[in-house]
Image 1 (cartoon, rainbow, N blue to C red):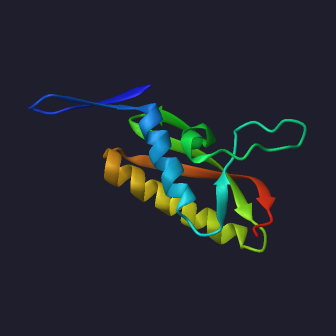
Image 2 (cartoon, rainbow, N blue to C red):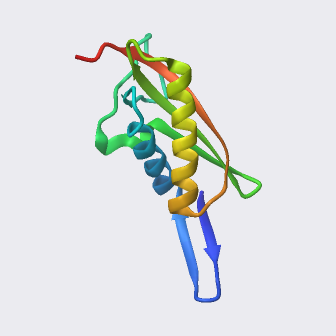
Length: 118
């Protein structure tokens, strides 16, 4: 799924991978986030993704010319999960709309785990 924006000068093609990477970077910049998580849980264990694989913790769908973004994260122990999720939703929506120029319908935050941070 590529998003094509056409203007009088030419075309701009924004790939799904770019949108997912933008969303992943925005999410990891929020306070209380330990990192991005894989979308699948195997035997109750969640894989913590490194900086090079941030887009694997994000799922992007395009419906009616609006983006629907699912973010899979791991939060730090002792933080208020509802506040972290709210901040991630706002930051991801703002970042994708600002840098990609695409309207975001909603951002869904999936907490895949809690980790004790040293």
